[in-house]
Image: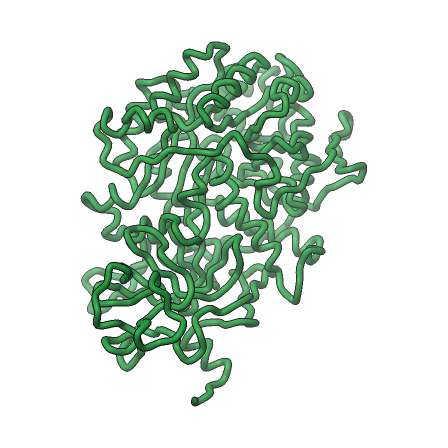
Length: 569
């Protein structure tokens, strides 16, 4: 067998075991842990290549043959960083490993069979990740959805009804009628969607009615009154219906302090939004809850990574989002109490320690919907530059840190909200919501997005050109975006109760409708690569943060990676 140099091999088939790939302009280095494609049997589409009839493509139609195969992809996932062919059938990932013609090639399994019905997508030199999941969405404007989608987010969870003041401040779709409108509006979009109901009620019947109307959980927000009673009732109903509860706690400590909130939660599982506190929550010590075993702690992206501009930009955001007035002294004091550089500085470090488990946006309500993925990787890179390699790393790479940060916007939010059976990772049996990246633009600009197994968005050149690549090249909607294809390619998540009662038929929904599950039997230990528990304290006078007795902080960055350099064209 003819041998080729490693450089030639990589140029033809992409990196293989032991090769290293830099992510964007960061200092994060991914090393290929394993190559499942089998040397000498690789798939390659094109003139004079192997993916042809009678060679790597079988002549025999079969029920196993794939709809689409992505060849030689570098998969970056919480399950590993490895190279493989990805087979897609019926909108799901059918196989990962060695694809091709099992009659002619070694190592090809039935679930990766290439036949006459199979389309090919060249993954050589590209990184494939699962689509991102943003669990903190204020549905203020529908334009958020394509913006988030173009960033690599394929699932959005939150609440709202449009630019009402309640939605501007709180991620809540309150009541049966509003849920009906939002579930019907969801039909339009290339995005998996799920809606949170209002949890601020000390009345089980009104809470239950919203879950039965299709909500996938509750959001409790201080602007509606985050009282211990509301917390207790929402959790009681959530336990009954197996849905998640997300919380924005009481900044002013009017109904109780952080200890009172934890007492009301009483060891039950809860997803805490912007757990640092600048986005809202018990001042000055909401960050303490991040170390608890029953808390699934999240950040919103305005405070990560911590930079020299972070503190200054938050005042105006607070005033607008929470309907405050700069001419009212008490409103200004309210805002000041939430913006603490010391706890923001600690937040980056807690992410690096695996104490914070999830990243999200807080879209148009003190958050940028198109920057969840970018800011997650900026934080990872900032922490590597400041603190060096993690002690858990093996070999001369950053694979552990990469898996830790990737998990924050993929598998962990999926687990938290009961949708990990369907999405959140690159695993066999899951929906094929996949994002393809050029390594140079990783974390900033996807090359292509596959939604439900079909191409939904891609960098595309002039439609009147003779080939696909001439400028102007920019994101354009592909066929999965259009007609009835979008119904098959996207999911609306609802509660099991609503699903069982036929919410899809009741509202005349055409998209896939699937139930959330296993929201109440999880803890911090289920958060992949981010399951660290610890005793966290905040000095009430200086706001310095201590983890197990040791102060944690970080320096504000003057410069971040994956920034304006990537947006000059």
